[in-house]
Length: 183
Image (cartoon, rainbow, N blue to C red):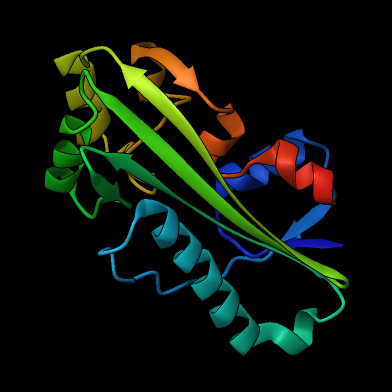
């Protein structure tokens, strides 16, 4: 049985839609890591830190299960964007994307009895200028909360995407095609 070690509703939905049998086990992680590294290194470090914290607390409870750890970050304007803590940060992050491009880097670690699979995937979006009223509604209604880089490519951002390179599941938090290849 696969255990999704995450609270993520998006990853839960992606696994359900892909018809992958799993159980979700939410766990609060301390993700305060040094951002003075590349975005690829950062997202990998977060996933490995999640694994470390999870196994320290729950290894005996889950030693006979396949485990899945994942995380995503957004890169825009040369900055690593995690989750905004307030509306001011949300506006700052969204300004870096407005009429520009942003990339979502998603990493996962799949631990099975006989192997470890580590994957980092990237999806880049190119945006036209955001409608300022739609932007205000998105931020003022706190719809950005819980979204890396305040990105909601299936919601607010959807109407402003000019071009996409990479798969949507990566942008939503988990590279499903690659994961399925290793299950």
